[in-house]
Length: 561
Image (cartoon, rainbow, N blue to C red; front, top):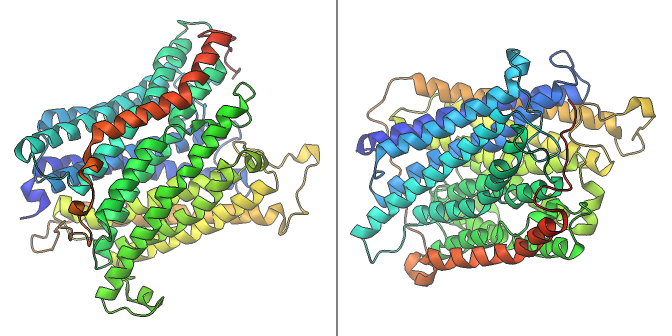
């Protein structure tokens, strides 16, 4: 039997989530290529510079929120079902959270694109970071609220499934994949409270005209309370893949189950109390709070370094099982002919580069050099744009046959696709980082400022060369995305092949859960500590803002259209 036969309802909801995720990726990826060509001046025949910001908002929301959330729900539904050996408690509830998220995504998309595509009188050109003084149409905020509420319902669905399993297995350790899902969702519940308060209490009533003004500093702070933790909401599904699936793809076993649990707990504890590092230049935030956020951010290097050690050790074990030898010679024995392995491995390698640029972002004094330059999108295109996105695409090559019973089509195309993505991102992100150091701004359709006479030709290679790199890289990324969608759609539309091996069985780790203390599974304890750390990091600053300026003051009117 296979997953699709054993759990047909869960397999169906996984496929539905994958469909929405990759539809969002396709549309958002097209917007990204148009932006890259327009901003660099290579081709400006698609949109005006005014409409650039509509596409920029659509690109950010569709990729950073819709694509990532729906893919996470697909992967985590599969992981919980597979690792617990049981389906969800109530499939009607499972359907409810899917349709809630879909309705929210459609509403947000209509708000963003309605005026551009169909002349609908909506406006949501607030970019991905939706805080005052930019104001969007109420539909935009309602849509985002429904997307978040739907994700909360999905987490509740997985917790209910876990409780049902626990009642039948009171003395068992939490299976690793389920442990990863539960800790990720606990982090998400804790961090998304900030954006829920921002949207429901402040910016949505403001956009509806129910309140005349809001405090930009307060809404910005509430957004960034959530805004950095959401990065790990994107990344932890990739960690899930690297820890539990990549070792199998490498031909070996996970090096250490206990280390994997420690890493996810560290993300639960440390992901949220760091948001002030996005507000280093905000004058309304005292320097002490910024320094505390910087310190907490540096601690987040620890789980990433532990991951690098554990995942590489697991891959080396697999390579040596396949006959590899030598200090580095074992690398040749890895399955470089497997598109799922290649994509996940290249994504992890690119994430290491993103970690180095992230350390620059985290440092208070160095951050001032790159803040609000194109360095910043260069960084997060390495993280969500490759570490997450390329891992998600790669593992789909392995996962989709399990939830559909269909053999992967066009394997040779699938093998080329991750290499092409890696090349495109190397060109684009490298140029973005270098241009950022030269002072080229982000979030603008006209970064060259020709009327002001500002040029950067003294920079090595010159800005013209960097613009060409960004345009070529962005185009290669879109071509890679088209190849992925071609493989996925071809497989989806093919006939089922009952004889293929679509087993999702994972080998036992070299060091299993019995080698770690049981306290690691005490999720109530770790959640309480996480809440305490958030209160320490944010309680006093938020209270100071409210007591100094009032809940809605000094206030801001929306920027004019």
